[in-house]
Length: 338
Ligand SMILES: C[S@@+](CC[C@H](N)C(=O)[O-])C[C@H]1O[C@@H](n2cnc3c(N)ncnc32)[C@H](O)[C@@H]1O
Image (cartoon, rainbow, N blue to C red; front, side, top):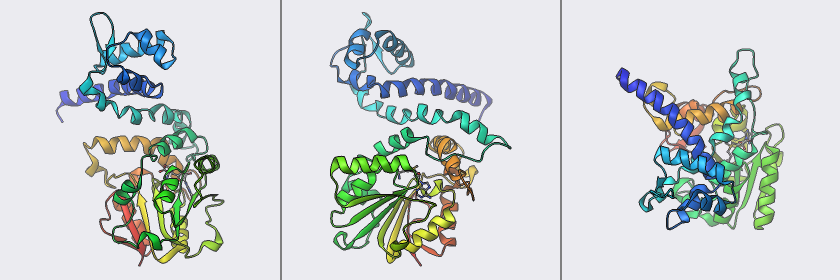
């Protein structure tokens, strides 16, 4: 990279970080949604009233958005998002996790220090887990078939028990239950707040074939040996502080002809191979604030996080005598007993 290019990229990345925070605010408060619903330009007061907000704050937000070029202004000071641009504000939802993970900053700074704590778990991060969970609400049967269900696996009707390991607040677990109405789906997590939320959701949506279980001391139920046809770990394997124990326990509860599907963010284990990859850079941010501290939250503190990468993950799975099916370097990896 040329020196000018380096300087420009560094400075615009910092500037964009500020603007992304303002985008997050607009997303959380429904300002983008409201602006997009208007069919003609509106004043800051009209926008504020439509969202039940204070006009003065909304005007400051509009000042930022219009300066950044994401909201247009008419000569008589009315604001709008051009029709053709409206579908392209979707990633405001992704920005909305920024203030949530930033709340970990003080704890994270301590973790970086040589003599500081090793990490932290998700017990103070329910908002972030709910944000992740919210993104799973659109995972319908089509999504499950295309992104999670093992190709050429058993007929759906023959699957009796499914385990969603590290289920968080449970939206995907409930989607799995809807997808497999004849099976019993178990969602397990070590996070008490998440399991409470998941149980509330189950009751509210009146889903019968799902059960949420709080895991104590990492141990899955002793009576579950060889119980599960299919086990899913979505955004979870790289977070585990004791993956060696967890994978052995997962192997124990998997039927001999069962399959495990694990999804982890797709990053190369070799930093050199991620150079210039903005998506990998973004995933490393999430990992630094959430996943690495989780994987270091208690002994033996595997310290994996997203930076563990696809190659190390595949080696780990093989080292436990498991057989990988298909592409071992995909975000989605499928494996069974050898
Ligand atoms: C990043 S979240 C993913 C949650 C959910 N699968 C999703 O995709 O929204 C990782 C989850 O793994 C859980 N977890 C961490 N260690 C665990 C363990 N040993 N057993 C079960 N769950 C665990 C965390 O509490 C957290 O809810």
